[in-house]
Image (cartoon, helix red, strand yellow):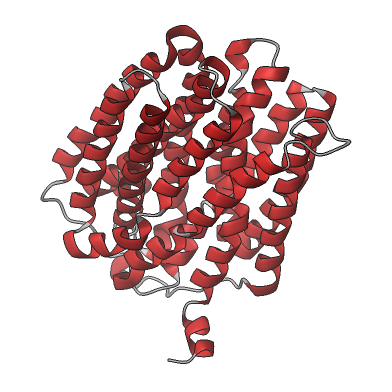
Length: 399
């Protein structure tokens, strides 16, 4: 197969992976700097992580509108419009930092969250563009974009934090606006809407309550939701605990966050193949074990290598749970049902991620790093009954 035919066959995967490399930097930059900037300009210490939490609430609140808008106007309109919004939001964040305006910074964080809600639909666009047997591998290749964003985002945030003539961290968000502009141009020049076959008569659209009662769909949503909520709780708390409370340098904190985000995406080199070999259910079980190992390590005294090990285990566990859950989800709906099921899934996943992120600041202030770990354990254990319920149940074919 020559290069041109390969590009035609996997155009959506290639284009969205490239756009994700630059667009996804919004999340790690805000994770790294949101709490630190918040601690400096927030009216009280327990509001320090509010910009990150509001970003995630923006994701949750936009999840359903994003899916509905794209079902009517196509994914291209949604992807381009939301990326333009994110560029404006990044510039507003820079303005907010320069003016020490916490409310404007929070507003910018919310709009970056709205953008991320649209960007989360990239994975579904990829899944719809390939045959069903290629979905796990294609999704894992797509998630490798996170490696680039894990390196690029925090590095831009740190490197441009001090720019001559600008207040501290203003350059970081101007840098983010530049990265988002690159993503916008990739989408503008190369992305095309993907059409998928309409469902046949025996695949008629079912009522939503009937769809969501499927045990495997419940597990798919639970795996992704728990992965994101626990990850958001621990990752949001880390910069505050490390840098603000334990006195580690911004460089050391950056390295831990970068290592965590790399751990989220590096397993994608093999996790898609793993799902093809052992199935999504067993991959989710492995993710649960890794999450429990993460919490166990995090209960130790918070030294640098405890932070590092905890965040690496958190990242790998997230990858297994999220990729396994997403793959399983695509097997639980027919093409005609995809937008409403995707909307409900993302609303639940990112709504609970918002809860995890909001809890981080309060728990750090009230109970310290140990309180974060204690809160993470029961949330993780909720995945066990979902796994038991899904065993032996069947799923529909999404193709």
